[in-house]
Length: 266
Image (tube, rainbow, N blue to C red; front, side):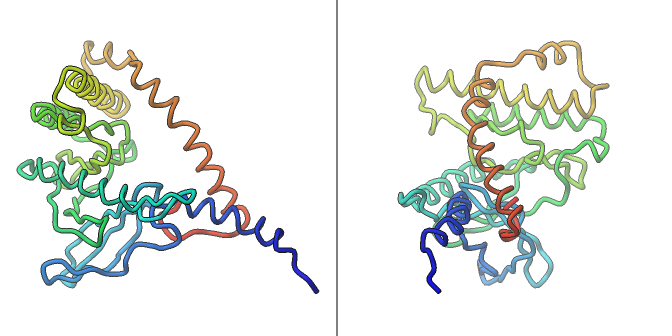
């Protein structure tokens, strides 16, 4: 009996395409790593997308930390290890710039060529499933104003999973992967203008969350601001929508055919 190699190729091609959309390809996060004499073991993989994979780790004392590893997998024949290295250094720089801010976790260390570790925040992502305490959004707005005062735009406030409602009742920010400052935008008129635009979008998305979760605290001025959608937001959605549609369909096809990926792939 002979086998048609083209049939095998047709079977495996969807797997190759989907794995190429993962930052570490077929590989998962490391089972363990050691920093400053302490060994941390994988507790749970929580995310694995095109640019990075993220997981929770514990040491022997029960301390939890978060490892984020940038892309190492090539894509369409193009090596992208350089991208993972660059993203790792870039994001770690934001955490270091905000090291004196109690609402941002501190850097613990680095793993491999593309990974960095930061402190774990006890809490849960912002969600309508949990009551938001009085004054939470006022504190969150003050935190964003502090970032803006330091010439930083967070850029990703549209994602509620990046805003943690700490067990201490305070807001905490994680994931500075696409944040912006004058070092990346350039300290010149267009760069400063772009930074201000993204800072405005930071506050716009915070007000959207506030309207959804604590509308009773929303002022009339804030209500008027949140109803206006900027050109930047419309452009972002236009650019990113095709990618996310493609990625969603590929993962659905993999699940439907029974070829499931490791944790953190959905």
